Amino acid sequence: MMTILSLKHAAAWRLIAAVLGVLTSTAAVAGAIMSGTMKPLGSVRFAPDNDVPCLLSALETGDPATGPSTWILKAPAGCVVPWHSHTAGEQLMVIRGAVLAEMTDHPATRLGPGGFAAMGGRMPHQFTCVRKVTCIMMITFDGRYDIRWGKGG
Image 1: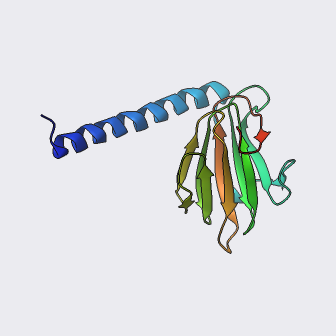
Image 2: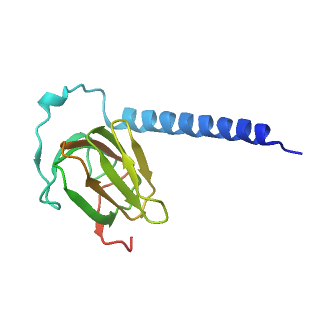
């Protein structure tokens, strides 16, 4: 008979295994797409985003036309990246500011610095910079970049 303590222990080990799996798969992908790079945040050359007028973006690594890529995004307070999805899986980490992250079938969640969200391929989601501070986020895609607008995925 499983006890609550043994269930918590098993869940902790599953979480550790999942985190290690993500870290090792991310390292393998990163090794395949670049030999190494380092950039201070102040050196990032942001450009207006082609899809969302209030958003600035900069490609950090990879080639979004052919495979995995990493982007850094800058959004002023109130900027909304409306409902959309991608074929590739996406991961987001907040560097500065507060982001309201929303996904279908998940509660809206406010993420501050260090906050993390992972969206599987074709998972509709949207983000809003919700504080008076400009939001800075790091986004990675595990495959070729594409975008479909709307909540339908």
